[in-house]
Image 1 (tube, rainbow over the protein chains, first blue to last red):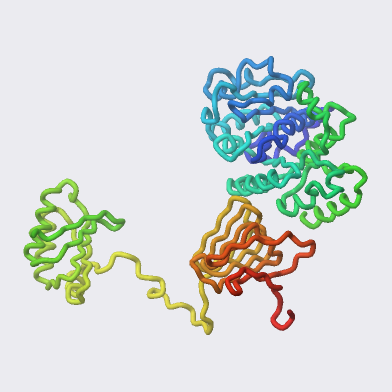
Image 2: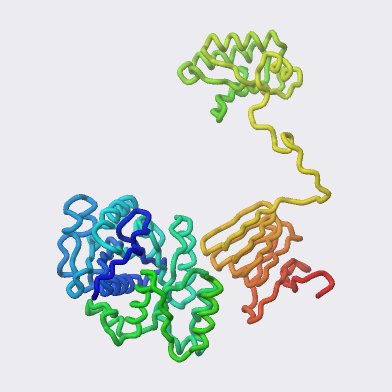
Length: 280
Length: 226
């Protein structure tokens, strides 16, 4: 856990920490899991990280991070001035450089506005290296709140037609907000189903979405176990999904990391390499 | 019967349309209307539409003076009568309120081709985006599933067409749809709706058109190479 606060963060337009928003359009594709794991992986790399749960009224990032019982103040409390920013930042049990600002459970998305989020994140930038915002599903107020402060947007999708369709819509909205180009994480990939032709292959998804891929996460039952126990899978050295999320975090910091092999399908990786090379 | 006086607020000021009748009665009706709604009219710029009334300079000049007594400025007089238009121009009043049409202002570039308007989009249309255009639509990029193009004329996609396209949406049965990979979710030409067959592994450029009332797709290639 060596402190690796490189100068790569200093290029942010607003100065200080970088805001990365995790979104998807469709629900249930793994936004919250990805937020918790990318946050934990960055913190394990030595960065100071704060995750924000943007899903006001349906909070669960605190559960996935195992911090539910420590909540005193939440995001709406900070925005409405009932507490200071630092009072709402819950420190993680395992990683001292990881914090969470939970969502309010008893309010709804209209409790905050996009400009509230921009102000809050601007204040946070001075405190941390990375701010990871977990967006709610949908394209309404909650999504716009989550996207407003973003320096970078990461779209999570599954290799399913409906999830990819929603991702495409979201990419268009992100471009319209001039927050693009978004980056893509393809979650819950089942290599043997792809091989049998029963699941969309990563090439199919990339051909349609045409944005930079920064993660291929294999389907892994242990992700559910880790979510339920509130312990991010990236802390499990043996898990392949954990390895994939660690690689996503590294790529977000600007490191070049080769994609891990999905099963033994090396043909796919070489094809992917060609696609990435061509797309730049 | 009292001549009609209709008032409408427009960008340029208050448009007052005067109905038919004996001009002195019309003028009286207008002035009564103004007196009744003095607060509303106060300081307004008037555009009078006198329709078919034929007015000479003295009549129109008198009206202008009466209006200015009510603190109103007469800015324009619209009329179907060339005499009235000339009178208004002599008095320094405008005789039309909208910008002249572009073709009147600047003659079109000389061209030996008869063409019609087309919209060129140089980007990929993602799910949720909708393009409507009365002419032709050309896309350099893909049209993803969930995107929609509604065109009065033809649609040409230099890329993969996977969304919904309606060509000849105003009912033109001659409209065509061309794409490098023609795999739309649904394709409509004029009043006909078609669903594309299952995607092929080797897509090739195709053109869809109406043949005997049915949407058919044909190879889109150089003439004589089919």
